[in-house]
Length: 94
Image (tube, rainbow, N blue to C red; front, side, top):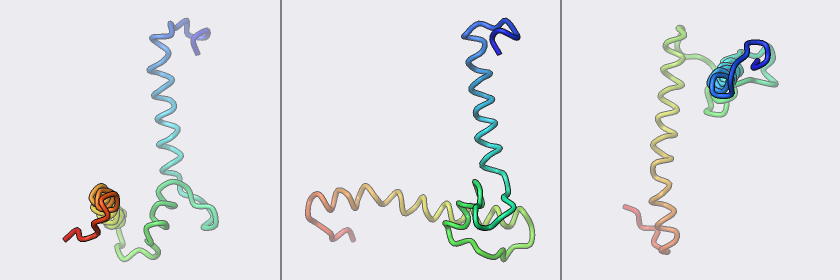
């Protein structure tokens, strides 16, 4: 890219980073043709236990996935308290 367009390192780096970001986003949003090898968000939805759509719209499905991600976030936020309790030998967190 630098040679073809006569760019400096400083000019080429942001472009290369954006290309990489776009490829990551594209790979994450791809819908696979086979359930045996899901890609990106499909794999995440399956891992969250999202099997059959209760919602009939894309927005409804995305909302369901968002709700599941919020539940995971809430559990992750509890991890530091569990680690601290474990280190102190105190499992009474309530």
